[in-house]
Image (cartoon, rainbow, N blue to C red; front, top):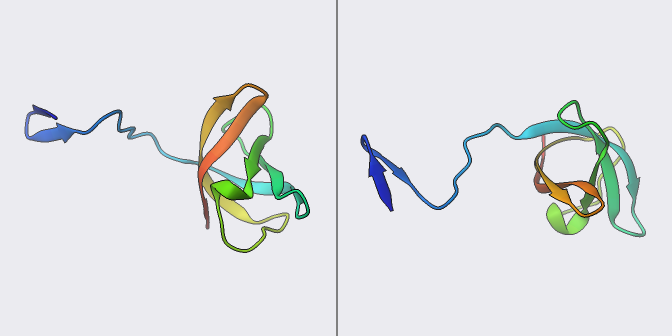
Length: 81
């Protein structure tokens, strides 16, 4: 761990705010969907393995991180609001 001016840095800790958006589409059979957000040019893909719990509904508000996946942006660390 590095100490700088009384602060500790642990790994690649990011202090960026999480993105916010709403479920634009959800396929409950496949367990995936897309989130509409102003934080990305395209809708962001998510899979229920990234959120857990009961199925989501279109219009549900979420908070999440965005990572670039081979097929486009993907939501991680998804939380219901």
